[in-house]
Length: 193
Image (cartoon, rainbow, N blue to C red; front, side, top):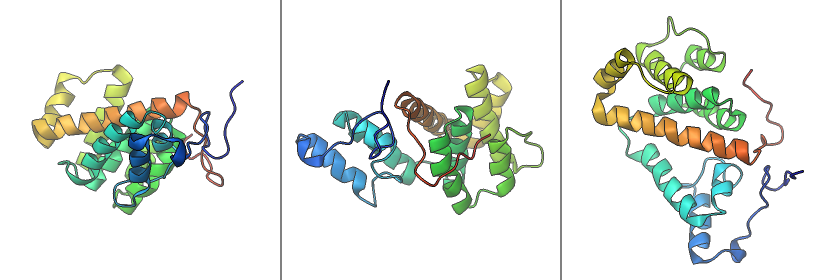
């Protein structure tokens, strides 16, 4: 039976900076940098990925791209992330990103529709489009021609590639969190039904 380590909140033991090689120490330090590091510190996907410093470095570069260089604005980004978290029932991702979605201005009706898998009627058109893309991608494992065309027309080809890459990245993170049985932080209750 695997153990949940209290320091990491998952099946993996904590890493000590001094036990890492040069690449690992550099990755460790970058993860704790408030400008470029993880929003949850070393608890969560960042701490898990540090067990392979090269993966941690490359994953963090992609996360940083989505924070600072993507065509997607913060609202679109967070809607995509919470849609992905919901599709994978990732309580940890949801707990980290639903508050961020609200903070960047995603309206409560959109967050609630994602949380409860509600119909998209009455939501802002772009919010509904992002959610529909995620639901179809993760549900049917493909995008219908009609939805693809709508999303491409709205986001452009580059924007749609970035949207799908963001969702795929967070789907991978949800799998990582599930495999290592990542627990919610103390005092945080599950918020997905």
